[in-house]
Length: 174
Length: 174
Image 1: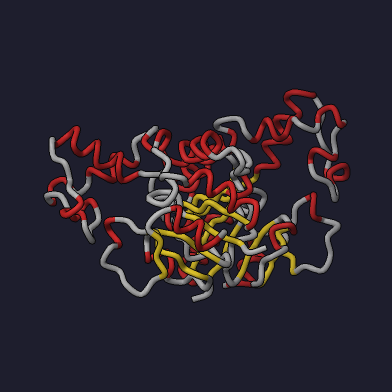
Image 2: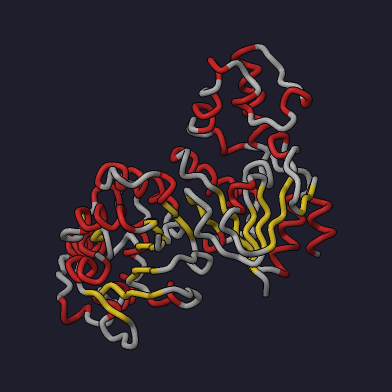
Protein backbone atom coordinates (compact mmCIF):
# COMPACT_ATOMS: atom_id res chain seq x y z
CA UNK A 1 0.00 0.00 0.00
CA UNK A 2 1.44 3.37 -0.99
CA UNK A 3 1.89 5.93 1.77
CA UNK A 4 0.85 9.55 1.35
CA UNK A 5 1.55 12.63 3.48
CA UNK A 6 -1.03 15.39 3.08
CA UNK A 7 -0.55 18.89 4.43
CA UNK A 8 -3.33 20.53 6.45
CA UNK A 9 -3.35 24.34 6.03
CA UNK A 10 -4.30 25.54 2.52
CA UNK A 11 -4.78 21.92 1.44
CA UNK A 12 -7.33 20.35 3.81
CA UNK A 13 -8.24 23.39 5.95
CA UNK A 14 -8.71 26.93 4.69
CA UNK A 15 -6.42 28.87 7.02
CA UNK A 16 -5.82 31.71 4.54
CA UNK A 17 -9.53 32.55 4.40
CA UNK A 18 -9.65 33.13 8.15
CA UNK A 19 -6.34 35.04 8.20
CA UNK A 20 -7.70 37.35 5.49
CA UNK A 21 -11.00 37.77 7.36
CA UNK A 22 -9.20 38.74 10.57
CA UNK A 23 -7.04 41.17 8.63
CA UNK A 24 -10.17 42.76 7.19
CA UNK A 25 -11.70 42.92 10.70
CA UNK A 26 -8.62 44.70 12.13
CA UNK A 27 -7.52 46.88 9.21
CA UNK A 28 -10.70 47.27 7.15
CA UNK A 29 -8.96 46.04 4.00
CA UNK A 30 -10.04 43.19 1.74
CA UNK A 31 -7.05 41.52 0.09
CA UNK A 32 -7.98 40.76 -3.51
CA UNK A 33 -6.94 37.72 -5.51
CA UNK A 34 -4.91 39.97 -7.80
CA UNK A 35 -2.98 41.44 -4.85
CA UNK A 36 -2.26 37.99 -3.45
CA UNK A 37 -1.26 36.31 -6.70
CA UNK A 38 2.19 34.80 -6.23
CA UNK A 39 2.58 36.31 -2.76
CA UNK A 40 2.45 35.27 0.86
CA UNK A 41 -0.03 37.22 2.96
CA UNK A 42 2.73 39.14 4.73
CA UNK A 43 4.15 40.22 1.36
CA UNK A 44 0.79 41.60 0.24
CA UNK A 45 0.25 44.03 3.13
CA UNK A 46 2.19 47.11 4.29
CA UNK A 47 5.42 45.97 5.99
CA UNK A 48 4.16 47.45 9.25
CA UNK A 49 1.43 44.79 9.26
CA UNK A 50 3.59 41.85 8.18
CA UNK A 51 3.82 40.28 11.65
CA UNK A 52 0.09 40.20 12.24
CA UNK A 53 -0.56 36.90 10.47
CA UNK A 54 1.92 35.11 12.72
CA UNK A 55 0.08 36.53 15.74
CA UNK A 56 -3.28 35.44 14.35
CA UNK A 57 -2.03 31.90 13.68
CA UNK A 58 -0.67 31.52 17.19
CA UNK A 59 -3.91 32.70 18.81
CA UNK A 60 -5.39 29.79 20.82
CA UNK A 61 -8.48 28.61 18.96
CA UNK A 62 -7.50 30.03 15.56
CA UNK A 63 -7.18 26.61 13.90
CA UNK A 64 -10.06 24.99 15.80
CA UNK A 65 -12.89 26.08 13.48
CA UNK A 66 -11.25 26.47 10.07
CA UNK A 67 -13.42 25.67 7.06
CA UNK A 68 -12.82 22.42 5.23
CA UNK A 69 -11.61 22.80 1.65
CA UNK A 70 -14.50 21.77 -0.64
CA UNK A 71 -14.86 17.95 -0.82
CA UNK A 72 -11.61 17.36 1.13
CA UNK A 73 -13.34 15.32 3.84
CA UNK A 74 -15.18 12.88 1.58
CA UNK A 75 -12.20 12.37 -0.75
CA UNK A 76 -9.82 11.93 2.22
CA UNK A 77 -12.15 9.21 3.50
CA UNK A 78 -11.75 7.39 0.17
CA UNK A 79 -7.97 7.93 0.09
CA UNK A 80 -7.82 6.52 3.62
CA UNK A 81 -9.15 3.20 2.31
CA UNK A 82 -6.57 2.83 -0.46
CA UNK A 83 -3.41 4.45 0.92
CA UNK A 84 -1.39 4.60 4.10
CA UNK A 85 -2.58 8.15 4.84
CA UNK A 86 -0.82 10.63 7.13
CA UNK A 87 -1.82 14.21 7.85
CA UNK A 88 1.43 16.10 8.24
CA UNK A 89 1.38 19.73 9.35
CA UNK A 90 4.36 21.97 10.04
CA UNK A 91 2.49 23.22 13.11
CA UNK A 92 5.38 23.63 15.52
CA UNK A 93 5.87 27.29 14.55
CA UNK A 94 2.52 27.87 16.28
CA UNK A 95 2.64 25.83 19.49
CA UNK A 96 -0.80 27.06 20.53
CA UNK A 97 -2.23 25.38 17.43
CA UNK A 98 -1.20 21.82 18.34
CA UNK A 99 -4.20 20.73 20.39
CA UNK A 100 -6.59 22.75 18.17
CA UNK A 101 -5.36 20.88 15.10
CA UNK A 102 -5.71 17.53 16.82
CA UNK A 103 -9.26 18.38 17.97
CA UNK A 104 -10.19 19.70 14.51
CA UNK A 105 -9.14 16.44 12.89
CA UNK A 106 -10.92 14.36 15.53
CA UNK A 107 -14.14 16.31 14.93
CA UNK A 108 -14.09 16.78 11.16
CA UNK A 109 -12.22 13.67 9.98
CA UNK A 110 -13.29 11.00 12.49
CA UNK A 111 -11.90 8.18 10.33
CA UNK A 112 -8.34 9.45 10.98
CA UNK A 113 -6.66 7.87 14.01
CA UNK A 114 -4.00 9.49 16.20
CA UNK A 115 -1.41 7.24 14.56
CA UNK A 116 -1.97 9.08 11.26
CA UNK A 117 -1.30 12.60 12.58
CA UNK A 118 2.12 14.23 12.54
CA UNK A 119 2.71 17.80 13.76
CA UNK A 120 6.26 18.75 12.99
CA UNK A 121 8.62 21.67 12.56
CA UNK A 122 10.49 20.83 9.38
CA UNK A 123 9.09 18.26 6.95
CA UNK A 124 12.61 17.37 5.81
CA UNK A 125 12.54 14.14 7.86
CA UNK A 126 9.19 12.94 6.43
CA UNK A 127 9.38 10.20 3.80
CA UNK A 128 6.29 8.70 2.18
CA UNK A 129 5.58 7.64 -1.40
CA UNK A 130 3.51 10.75 -2.18
CA UNK A 131 3.29 14.23 -0.63
CA UNK A 132 0.60 16.83 -1.29
CA UNK A 133 1.57 20.29 -0.07
CA UNK A 134 1.16 23.96 -0.95
CA UNK A 135 4.74 24.88 0.06
CA UNK A 136 7.52 23.88 -2.31
CA UNK A 137 10.06 24.19 0.54
CA UNK A 138 8.51 20.98 1.93
CA UNK A 139 9.45 19.12 -1.26
CA UNK A 140 13.15 20.02 -1.05
CA UNK A 141 14.45 16.82 0.57
CA UNK A 142 11.41 14.72 -0.27
CA UNK A 143 12.18 11.74 -2.49
CA UNK A 144 8.66 10.60 -3.43
CA UNK A 145 6.02 11.99 -5.83
CA UNK A 146 5.42 15.66 -5.12
CA UNK A 147 2.00 17.19 -5.80
CA UNK A 148 1.68 20.94 -5.36
CA UNK A 149 -1.75 22.11 -4.18
CA UNK A 150 -2.49 25.52 -5.67
CA UNK A 151 -2.58 28.47 -3.30
CA UNK A 152 -2.22 32.19 -4.05
CA UNK A 153 1.38 32.22 -2.84
CA UNK A 154 2.57 29.39 -5.14
CA UNK A 155 0.85 30.42 -8.40
CA UNK A 156 4.14 31.49 -10.00
CA UNK A 157 5.89 28.18 -9.26
CA UNK A 158 6.45 26.01 -12.30
CA UNK A 159 7.93 22.56 -12.71
CA UNK A 160 5.67 20.75 -10.23
CA UNK A 161 2.78 18.38 -10.72
CA UNK A 162 -0.11 20.58 -9.61
CA UNK A 163 -3.68 20.17 -8.43
CA UNK A 164 -6.15 23.04 -8.07
CA UNK A 165 -8.80 21.35 -5.95
CA UNK A 166 -9.81 18.05 -4.35
CA UNK A 167 -11.65 16.84 -7.43
CA UNK A 168 -8.30 16.84 -9.23
CA UNK A 169 -6.73 14.89 -6.35
CA UNK A 170 -9.56 12.38 -6.66
CA UNK A 171 -8.92 12.01 -10.40
CA UNK A 172 -5.20 11.52 -9.91
CA UNK A 173 -5.23 9.17 -6.92
CA UNK A 174 -8.51 7.23 -6.89
CA UNK B 1 25.79 16.54 8.09
CA UNK B 2 24.12 13.35 9.35
CA UNK B 3 20.58 13.65 10.63
CA UNK B 4 19.46 12.03 13.87
CA UNK B 5 16.00 11.51 15.36
CA UNK B 6 15.99 11.15 19.13
CA UNK B 7 12.96 9.99 21.11
CA UNK B 8 11.83 11.95 24.17
CA UNK B 9 10.18 9.69 26.79
CA UNK B 10 12.56 7.20 28.43
CA UNK B 11 15.44 8.61 26.39
CA UNK B 12 15.61 12.35 27.10
CA UNK B 13 12.87 12.69 29.73
CA UNK B 14 12.14 10.24 32.55
CA UNK B 15 8.43 9.61 32.08
CA UNK B 16 8.52 6.14 33.67
CA UNK B 17 9.82 7.53 36.96
CA UNK B 18 6.81 9.84 37.27
CA UNK B 19 4.33 7.15 36.15
CA UNK B 20 5.72 4.82 38.82
CA UNK B 21 5.57 7.58 41.46
CA UNK B 22 1.93 8.32 40.64
CA UNK B 23 1.14 4.60 40.81
CA UNK B 24 2.72 4.44 44.25
CA UNK B 25 0.74 7.52 45.31
CA UNK B 26 -2.58 5.97 44.19
CA UNK B 27 -2.05 2.28 44.99
CA UNK B 28 0.64 2.33 47.68
CA UNK B 29 2.87 -0.06 45.74
CA UNK B 30 6.46 0.46 44.68
CA UNK B 31 7.24 -1.34 41.42
CA UNK B 32 10.69 -2.89 41.73
CA UNK B 33 13.29 -3.20 39.00
CA UNK B 34 12.91 -6.99 39.13
CA UNK B 35 9.15 -6.78 38.59
CA UNK B 36 9.60 -4.39 35.67
CA UNK B 37 12.42 -6.25 33.92
CA UNK B 38 11.34 -6.97 30.35
CA UNK B 39 7.85 -5.57 30.93
CA UNK B 40 5.79 -2.52 30.16
CA UNK B 41 4.32 -0.82 33.22
CA UNK B 42 0.81 -2.05 32.43
CA UNK B 43 2.10 -5.64 32.26
CA UNK B 44 3.69 -5.37 35.71
CA UNK B 45 0.53 -4.38 37.62
CA UNK B 46 -2.78 -6.23 38.23
CA UNK B 47 -4.84 -6.16 35.00
CA UNK B 48 -7.48 -4.09 36.79
CA UNK B 49 -4.90 -1.26 37.02
CA UNK B 50 -3.51 -1.60 33.50
CA UNK B 51 -5.35 1.45 32.09
CA UNK B 52 -4.12 3.82 34.76
CA UNK B 53 -0.82 4.69 33.07
CA UNK B 54 -2.61 5.86 29.94
CA UNK B 55 -4.79 8.11 32.12
CA UNK B 56 -1.72 9.51 33.90
CA UNK B 57 0.06 10.22 30.62
CA UNK B 58 -2.92 12.10 29.21
CA UNK B 59 -3.31 14.27 32.31
CA UNK B 60 -2.63 17.92 31.34
CA UNK B 61 0.68 18.89 32.91
CA UNK B 62 2.03 15.34 33.28
CA UNK B 63 4.89 15.83 30.81
CA UNK B 64 5.58 19.45 31.75
CA UNK B 65 7.96 18.80 34.65
CA UNK B 66 9.56 15.45 33.87
CA UNK B 67 13.12 14.94 35.04
CA UNK B 68 15.90 15.09 32.47
CA UNK B 69 17.80 11.83 31.99
CA UNK B 70 21.28 12.33 33.51
CA UNK B 71 23.54 14.39 31.18
CA UNK B 72 21.00 14.30 28.32
CA UNK B 73 20.84 18.11 28.09
CA UNK B 74 24.57 18.80 27.89
CA UNK B 75 25.23 15.95 25.46
CA UNK B 76 22.25 16.95 23.29
CA UNK B 77 23.73 20.44 23.10
CA UNK B 78 26.94 18.91 21.70
CA UNK B 79 25.08 16.62 19.30
CA UNK B 80 23.15 19.66 18.08
CA UNK B 81 26.42 21.19 16.86
CA UNK B 82 27.52 18.16 14.83
CA UNK B 83 24.28 16.61 13.55
CA UNK B 84 20.97 17.63 12.04
CA UNK B 85 19.12 16.92 15.29
CA UNK B 86 15.38 16.26 15.58
CA UNK B 87 13.44 15.40 18.72
CA UNK B 88 10.74 12.99 17.59
CA UNK B 89 8.07 11.90 20.05
CA UNK B 90 5.09 9.63 19.36
CA UNK B 91 3.01 12.03 21.44
CA UNK B 92 -0.24 11.95 19.48
CA UNK B 93 -1.64 9.12 21.65
CA UNK B 94 -1.75 11.73 24.42
CA UNK B 95 -3.10 14.91 22.82
CA UNK B 96 -3.01 16.75 26.12
CA UNK B 97 0.76 16.29 26.18
CA UNK B 98 1.49 18.22 22.98
CA UNK B 99 1.87 21.73 24.37
CA UNK B 100 3.49 20.43 27.57
CA UNK B 101 6.18 18.67 25.53
CA UNK B 102 6.82 21.77 23.45
CA UNK B 103 7.08 23.95 26.58
CA UNK B 104 9.34 21.41 28.31
CA UNK B 105 11.77 21.46 25.38
CA UNK B 106 11.68 25.25 25.16
CA UNK B 107 12.52 25.52 28.88
CA UNK B 108 15.03 22.70 29.33
CA UNK B 109 16.69 22.54 25.90
CA UNK B 110 16.69 26.18 24.76
CA UNK B 111 19.14 25.46 21.91
CA UNK B 112 16.46 23.38 20.15
CA UNK B 113 14.32 25.39 17.71
CA UNK B 114 10.71 24.64 16.77
CA UNK B 115 11.96 23.36 13.41
CA UNK B 116 13.65 20.46 15.20
CA UNK B 117 10.57 19.17 17.02
CA UNK B 118 8.25 16.52 15.63
CA UNK B 119 5.25 15.19 17.55
CA UNK B 120 3.76 12.31 15.63
CA UNK B 121 1.54 9.28 15.91
CA UNK B 122 3.49 6.58 14.11
CA UNK B 123 7.22 7.01 13.49
CA UNK B 124 6.97 4.87 10.35
CA UNK B 125 7.19 7.97 8.13
CA UNK B 126 10.32 9.37 9.81
CA UNK B 127 13.60 8.91 7.94
CA UNK B 128 16.92 10.20 9.26
CA UNK B 129 20.41 8.71 9.22
CA UNK B 130 20.27 7.64 12.88
CA UNK B 131 17.43 6.99 15.33
CA UNK B 132 17.74 6.59 19.10
CA UNK B 133 14.62 5.11 20.69
CA UNK B 134 13.55 2.82 23.53
CA UNK B 135 10.76 1.16 21.47
CA UNK B 136 11.81 -1.37 18.86
CA UNK B 137 8.45 -0.91 17.08
CA UNK B 138 9.75 2.50 15.99
CA UNK B 139 12.65 0.82 14.17
CA UNK B 140 10.41 -1.43 12.04
CA UNK B 141 10.32 0.65 8.86
CA UNK B 142 13.36 2.75 9.71
CA UNK B 143 16.21 2.40 7.21
CA UNK B 144 19.02 4.18 9.06
CA UNK B 145 21.21 3.21 12.02
CA UNK B 146 19.04 2.10 14.94
CA UNK B 147 20.26 2.62 18.51
CA UNK B 148 18.13 1.14 21.29
CA UNK B 149 18.14 3.10 24.54
CA UNK B 150 17.80 0.72 27.46
CA UNK B 151 14.55 0.82 29.44
CA UNK B 152 13.03 -1.81 31.71
CA UNK B 153 10.55 -2.88 29.05
CA UNK B 154 13.18 -3.57 26.36
CA UNK B 155 15.79 -5.42 28.44
CA UNK B 156 14.98 -8.77 26.82
CA UNK B 157 15.38 -7.46 23.26
CA UNK B 158 18.51 -8.67 21.51
CA UNK B 159 19.93 -7.92 18.09
CA UNK B 160 20.05 -4.14 18.43
CA UNK B 161 22.90 -1.73 18.95
CA UNK B 162 22.20 -0.62 22.51
CA UNK B 163 23.10 2.26 24.82
CA UNK B 164 22.44 2.29 28.56
CA UNK B 165 22.90 5.99 29.25
CA UNK B 166 23.90 9.30 27.70
CA UNK B 167 27.60 8.80 28.35
CA UNK B 168 27.45 5.83 25.99
CA UNK B 169 25.66 7.99 23.39
CA UNK B 170 28.43 10.55 23.78
CA UNK B 171 31.10 7.89 23.21
CA UNK B 172 29.36 6.53 20.12
CA UNK B 173 28.40 9.78 18.42
CA UNK B 174 30.80 12.53 19.50
